[in-house]
Length: 321
Image 1 (cartoon, rainbow, N blue to C red):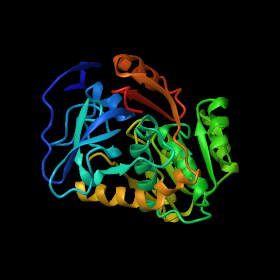
Image 2 (image 1 turned 45 degrees about the vertical axis):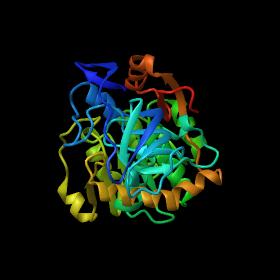
Image 3 (image 1 turned 120 degrees about the vertical axis):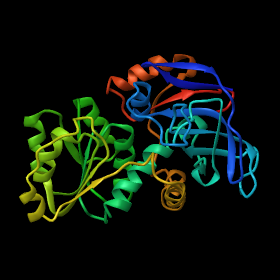
């Protein structure tokens, strides 16, 4: 099979051995795979896959089941999307059968390729780790990103007013159209204007470093700050008196290196609580653009521009849609 690997800061679509499908696993003929910032980091040699995971890029995909290992309930021909620790940007991928979900009603395979990673991330961090309850206020940094787009829609669906920080007026308008109450543009002075909308019960932050002090100021009593990235650096000076006085919970969270059972439980919750909302029209995939796999470098460049609203997808097999 052919697969996409990061090689010295570039990507290479090349032949490699197909993985073996074992007990409890399914093989998926990949239609398309979502592109994530983790793929950018891995291509640059900054984010190696967890031990035992595929070195092939791609943390999510959608396609058709082509082989079923013993002990699985899936059938050959089922249309699925899957959450992966790696391997999605390939003609075939083998995955723990519990980490696959049916394609939501009314969603194409290409759109579904952009769902598992961002919805799993948003659901895990907002509703499971931060314990978000109806009516509580949320701040989403990088609100127009794939995770931000999913989080805005989930907040709207579950009764949580949310605000965003973004990089341009156009991206703010995009977030408001999805359901955000409002927000601000990046920049020290503009970010301080978030005080007008707070305090916030939960902050979901992929920036880290240079937003840390601001987050402490913006959080309400008993607020929860969930950090999921380091786009703004990995070091910061914190006022621990403020953290203690407000009883703030600071939660560091990653998904890729979670164990298999944890991911299976998370996907089970997604299927039960989130997937039905697609059929109801309350959630919609936010697929900005699809690229053929031959244009992978162009897709990576567009993602690196930080101008993407929602998600980008690489199409592996155009005959599947």
